[in-house]
Image 1 (cartoon, rainbow, N blue to C red):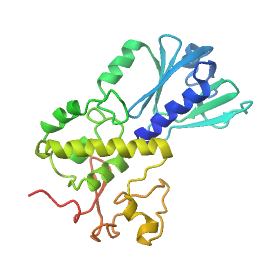
Image 2: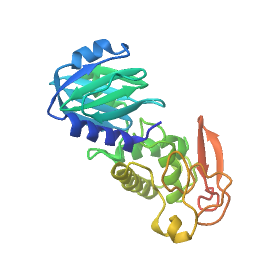
Image 3: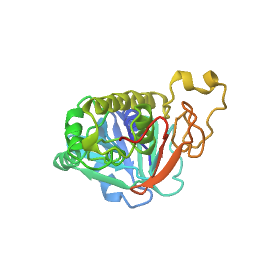
Length: 271
């Protein structure tokens, strides 16, 4: 599933291609025909992201809400739009550009009140200027749930997924099983600040890189990572391999239905 940096990039791309322009909207697949009709001919006024949710405001009060889920994907193009290929849920066209949406988990038109309900159930997004890490901390500090699970709870912290979760805990030396109520506030502040830096870099470069310069392939004389997700990481999908920092074997287990990766040497269990 795309993590929050991808959704912020999508918001910026929609604004670049369609911002301030009257946009044509259609649903070649037919499943979003009524929603597309509401958007057709409207001007894209604003493109925003909150966690893994994309929010595009058309006209004064119509907001397209998209959650890509596991299979959703946008493709963009310029020039005359070709005949749709595959199950295109939504096609936007305007200003000599087009965008096709396929396979989203959610694609719907919301009014301002419904947008507020959505935002109110989402946690603090490290990529948003209006994010409140103290609000997230209050949720974490009173929870007996592990910090690994809390970081994936979108009602607590919106945006991070499995990669950022594993990597930020490694970088801050926090064992994933530590309960939220046992986490020191200073360590939470360090996690939050690191998430902001890592995810902002993800927005800028379009991939997740979490390895510090001294541990990059050229610095260590090792081969670059080869993985569909791209980017250099410390522990994500490196189970059974030596840690780049201490040499311990990276471990993995399934927690709350997702694979969790950590280094027992760099992230010792709390006593």
